[in-house]
Length: 267
Image (tube, rainbow, N blue to C red):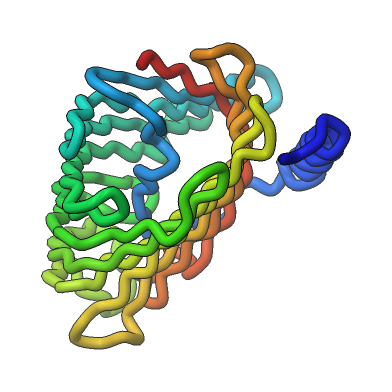
């Protein structure tokens, strides 16, 4: 169990990292989007539940911009079934012109076969102006196993998903195809650590190679610190790294993001 002094030192270290790395803008580069629903969904829920996460930045004067990120999750948990709906928007404008406009809808269902074994099934639709993505549709299924349970949890999962992707042909400047129809592996690694009653670490990794060519690889790694301010409100600090081995021209292979925000959950 983490002592209060260790918790305070960990919190201070995280806030120092935010202060040092916060000026690194994700606008400098962006890889293809992978949606991290593990970070968006609340844990330890029963029955109906819903949550809201958001970030907002405004500037007027020498630099005029609006940067808003919002996500909504709602669902119902039965004893062996869990159904969720995720809706989200990531919007940024500079001097009145939109430079980022990402939207997604994600439906996810889990079925427990045993206390540590569950299946997962999902459908997702998203668009991302910044990533030249007019529309991406995913559907997939897989199996997930909890290796460690308690204050520390560790899950491994693997499955199959089909990806249908349409890019903005008018903005592609190389020979990258504007249409893709690909079967990918849907691998995930999820770990959580309860540091204290008010501190929780969540680590998530997605690894998604194409079955036809393992060199066509997309990954996401996310580490989040959730600080409980009240029983329903958390301060969240997270760092995220995305990688796409074969993005279209004008989209970088790697994207790093460090951000802070608030999450409200009603269980």
